[in-house]
Image (cartoon, rainbow, N blue to C red; front, side, top):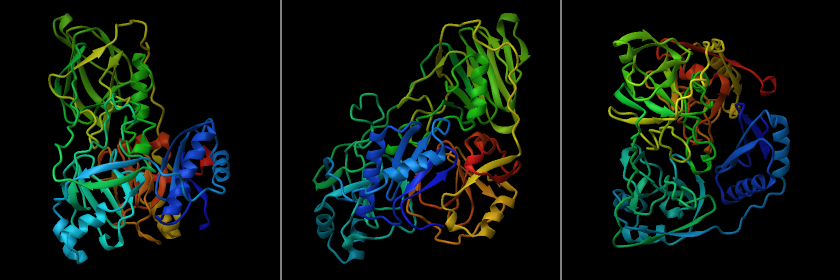
Length: 525
């Protein structure tokens, strides 16, 4: 592996990472920020968004508008003679009440008084190095060397919103209640992330390059509240929600630089088929179900289609003396006012999609997708209502729509951290029949079958991440990142699933469906 910098590496078929150095330091962070600015000013065709991290810049692109080779050459050109420093960003003062649970322990471990810890922490400006982990979470550096402690051996399951903490050379503020292992020094009531439409300067209070100063204060206000979701429409009502039934759409592209996950449908291809059947745009909102039990009542006439995992569904016709009819897969069915749809069984997969013609749903940050990890919107509940547009009898497809056949092999593009694995480890990854573990979710599919060993370090300097990336943490158990995955990660990625194949992993039945990977080159797509 070439250890010279800069270097551009493929991250699947929709992103690349530009690595500018091997470590976290002020000069490398400055060059990443400068490259990010150059890229924005260059307006390269096909470039969709970029995510600056400590030592690299992840760039998402449309390979139909820009080839990997073409983008690589452009990015290498932009990476020449980057300045190692940038003009100072905004100075943001954060009033902080220093009463953290770990303040006394930090003082004792560092051989300082609590007052000295407070003085050292609040006595300097910190630069926002990157955002990751959770929407609005800013990694800031650099903490005084006398305060540099490792993370707690046992992370807390709940760190309160507004907690001010330190770990290693960095400090940060938890934007909402989250699990975490950093050492808690205090708390603030500053709202770090506001997803409401009224957030004029963008949803994140802190951005890369900003400077932050913690100001000791004897009192702070209440922690910011989480916005609540109201599903108060009148066209379709939820009689029974089933288990973890959510609204999903094309997700939230364009916000990864402020640590907002893409989210959206876990199996986008199936959702697009369902939408096509009823005449909706490809990324229109659909109902994603992962278990039977959903029951919907229609107050208006609509077309309904189901795709994805095979379901047993019935439409009860109150207009025909409550006669029931089966709902076939991948075809539009007219549901009239007073009809009810019931999902009774799911087979051959774990997620199905119900598309309803003209379905409308509440949106947050431009999307109707529910993001459980970020607390954006919520699963459907009994009594919820959804609006639909005026019925158009000509909008739906008249014939069943065939799902494109799916190969049993999941295509991957090796890397970007291939140097962390030897040839035997890569061969084992490609030859092993994998099963999805029961502890998988929309964030990631955890694979059972073999523990992969690392030929290099088992952690990396955190860089950008996207759905499809296959991380291998220190325990050697691979994780295929899915739609709700975070925007950055600190484990080596052995490969990335080709985007068109990600639905194969999302639909794998835990403990039953065998997954095998086959390596291809991005040039072969």
